[in-house]
Image (cartoon, rainbow, N blue to C red; front, side):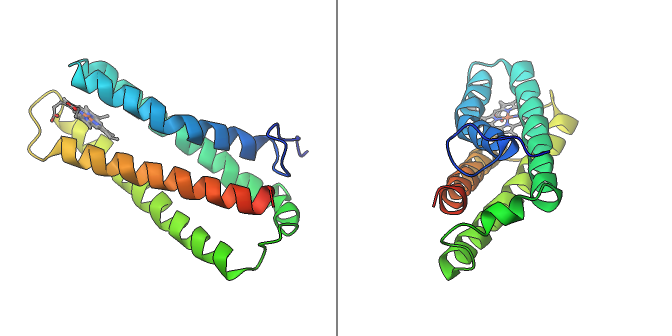
Length: 151
Ligand code: HEM
C-alpha cells in the first residue's frame, strides 16, 4: 500500500524519507570527516560504514518503490515527463550516483583493510573527491525530485 509523503508534493513516504536523509547526508558526512580531523579514527571509520549502509538500504527501498510501488503513475503526472531536460538531468544524476556509490564503497573497503596501519594511497584526497561526488548526487537528486514530484 502506498503511504502519503510529508513534504507536500506528489511523492510518497519512502521517496520523502530518502530526500530528507539525502539532504542531511552532506552534513553527517562532514561530521564523520571531522572525527578524522580530531584523530577519532574509530568513530570516523564506524560513522562512514553506518552512513554507507543506511543510505544504500534506503536507495534499495527507493528502487523497489519505483519498480513495484506504482510510483510510475505519479511520475507521469509531471509536466517534465518525457522531456529532454528531465532525461539529461536524470542521466547526469545517474552518473554521479553510480560513481559516488562505487567510490565510497571502494574507499571504505581499501581503508578498512589497511587500518590502523598508515595508508599507502592519498586517503584524504580520495575522501574529498568522494564527498564532492556524493554532494553532486544529492543536488541532482533534489533537482529530479522538484521536477518529477513538485511540478
Ligand atoms: C571506513 C573506512 C575508513 C577508515 C578506516 C578511515 C580512516 C582514516 C584515517 C586513519 C585518517 C587520517 C589519516 C589520513 O588522513 O590519511 C582519515 C582521514 C580522512 N578520511 Fe577517512 N577513513 C575511512 C573512510 C573514509 C571515507 C569513506 C571518506 C570520505 C567519504 C573519508 C574521508 C576522510 C578525510 C577527508 C580525511 C582527512 C581529514 C582531515 O584531516 O582533514 N574516510 N581517515
